[in-house]
Length: 255
Image (cartoon, rainbow, N blue to C red; front, side):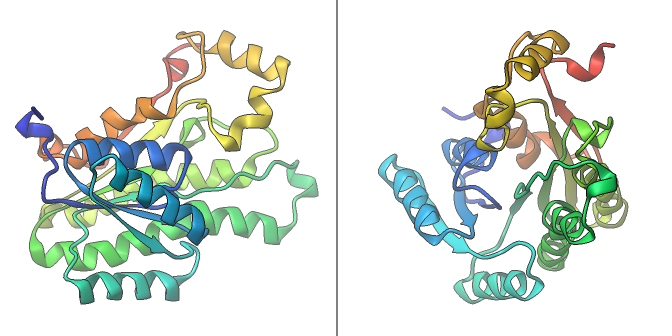
């Protein structure tokens, strides 16, 4: 039986970029806690397949295919939710990309693409969600940050800037929307086993660095974000606001 503090029955959770990776793992956690999950991505076939997987497991799920970098597409998606009578109770801004290149060689278009996908999208989605949450007097927004919300690494400048911005966007959301019963918080994953990190996982030198630098001595698993996500989406976190919780095996705690 689900602990009432963490029960998400009757809640609708929109998780961007949730047809695979970290987004899929968090959506799994929400569904197991009783939420209706809305799977998002730009690949309609993959989104539809993911929804089918959820349904086969007895979970409530539906699809919403749109590009998080398009303001028009975001507004259209929320208009569609409104038309269906679907209130977004939980929004997880998870969709993101990485682009590795030294700053002196970085094209402005590539910089902007990473910022738009990882940061500006969270603002636009959060704004549309909050416009509807405010009249209801409740809502949960979870932004996905990174270790680079705190620390920088060479060759990932736009990602670092975007994730640093996520931390401050989360605080700005709390500053403006907490008075309306909305909790905006963030999760900062450590090095996780995902498709985006596969090249790093396959690099023996980098793999050894991650394991040596992390007190847990291993990479994180996507499903290890689910508990924190459910906590931040549930009534258990109703007085938690503007925070970023790092799920990183202890990496940020040590030199």
